[in-house]
Image (tube, rainbow, N blue to C red):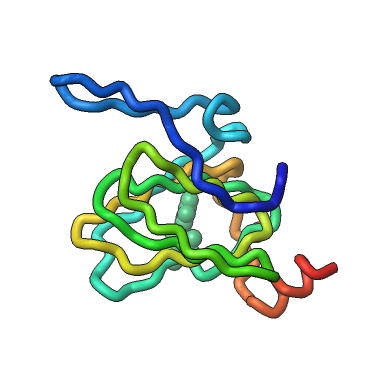
Amino acid sequence: MENKARILKLPEIINNRGSLSYIETHRHVPFDIKRVFWIYDVPGGEIRGGHAYQEQHEFIIALSGSFDVIVDDGFNTQKFSLNRSYFGLLIPALNWRQLENFSTNALSLHLSSKEYDYDDYIREYEKFLELVKK
Ligand code: TYD
């Protein structure tokens, strides 16, 4: 998979009864979904993440509210503001990512290509730079 983080548009079924969006493995996200987790009740000003993964890919959606995701590939840093549930941010492995600026009632949904694996985390930024600049 290409290493570049990017926003992907999801299907929207809109009618006068409301709206519905959905995600299918490989059709809308380019990996098998092995795990789903979500982050909520984030106090104002708090920062989540601040690490990279060696192997797992992630897809993040703002199901409710808004927040920013800062993605750094070791060469460039980009800020993605997520605030609509029909857009998702694909973050391939080996990108340093941090979530910040959570609104009240923000809910971030994360789809991951791997089960939780403590050893897949890269927690030291210097180590991350060594890995991506090899
Ligand atoms: P972590 O990924 O470190 O989140 P953050 O970087 O935002 O603090 O996860 C926080 C804690 O939750 C950590 O102790 C590991 C645990 N955790 C799981 O047990 N399973 C999971 O799928 C995730 C994402 C976290």
